[in-house]
Image 1 (cartoon, rainbow, N blue to C red):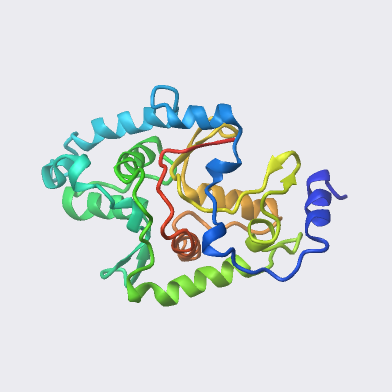
Image 2 (cartoon, one colour):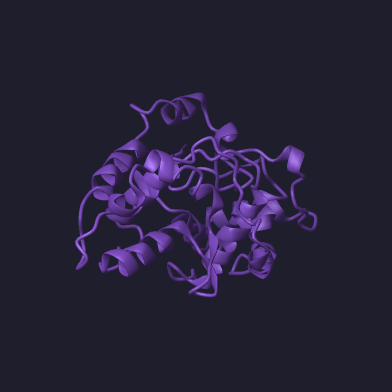
Length: 257
């Protein structure tokens, strides 16, 4: 049995050319594809639901935890200065892991190494809150991810995954976000897929969510097996997408339909 969504996707890409990356000058944030009322929600802190997680993050930042009985603030003090621009550089190469890690993984690494606390589960309110707080301090900063030469082979792997057709629908990320951006699929705008606003509040979710949550949803949508949270493949895909958006402004916490 074929579903309406599958038919729409198949029609959308039936005549698509081979994927080609969007030229730098033509790259647009997902913000530019939204309706005015959704943009207004993102722009006003008192209307942006993502700010509730930022406020939670501020409380968690100052809370002592773990066997070390330390708070994030004990090492990093005020986020407005110590975390300024940090999120714009993630995923980043981690020497101990020998590979890139994303911002959520960095937060959990700090919890384990410095607070001697257990890792926070992916997509938990607490981890999203701390991530949103840190990401908020990079709002308006240009994305710098990918400048480290050690990241080059991992960016290449992420690009390969982005271009790779997979799943029962035999689609790649590029078929929508490079070949068919500014068109519509099942009534929704197809954006260029730049992750400038994560973690972001998605109206469909009625919650804040990470980039990995969105990637897993897309992979499931093309009838492929989604990678587990924290899987190297998802981090490499995150890394490629952020490096592809290099120079664009951070918006977290953004709001999307």
